[in-house]
Image (spheres, rainbow, N blue to C red):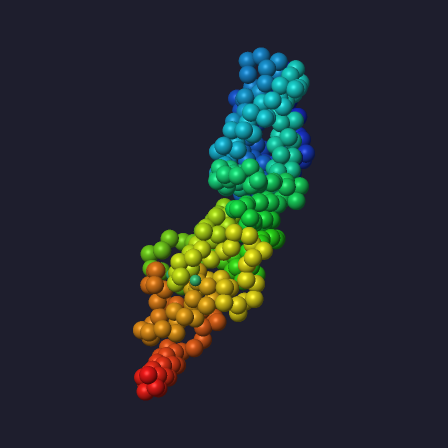
Length: 326
Ligand SMILES: [Zn+2]
Ligand SMILES: [Zn+2]
């Protein structure tokens, strides 16, 4: 028996027993093909071919996956080749397969390789970082904009992307109302990635869960990149102070920054002024023409109109009194 035949029979005997989640698809002189399944998404098929003067030269490796990133596989292939070179002269296949299984176990974030790279390419400031914590399957992102920051930690579950990322924490120096909004929206974005819409439209393709890491992160990044420059739609001043310490924290204070349904910003006092002036009925955001909904503004249109009319009448009376005495 040649060295290759010995290795083949060793693989037949030990592969599925030694490598958790592995399935020996073919094991002949022409090719050894093994599927390694860590989860439904983290599944790799490894095709290996003997070279002419094997094992003095490294085994030829081709990795395939229906789910994992193409770029990740290219990188992983060259790492495997490097591993094979360390054991020239010896049987290499089982060692490489064990290495692959360990890689999948030790790098749970490999399932979001492309998403993480896309996010990295969006960072513009040296203070901004994306840290990967493979041991705990967490992605930690820190984004800054002037004096404002958003730090958030996302947990990538084992069943990702069929389950969404879990938003473990968001730290920010935006006011609490904005923190609540960001967290709520981020959770909604994640939920929509895995839950089909309640009402299905006709001719809509069958719902399929999609990856949520990038979508959630981009939303949180966008909040910090955009909000500090947004104007009040009424007085046109920038809403957020340059120094977050100067922000109005009293949620009923005149300068408190309010976000209305269409997501445009107003100072509290500006929103009140705008809502209390005519025309009444279906008050719209002056910028985007969406109806204004705001939980602090529960006064009905009719009531607002009556109050306005009342104030106008009072002013007229005062003017008449003034005229009388002049
Ligand atoms: Zn304003
Ligand atoms: Zn608007």
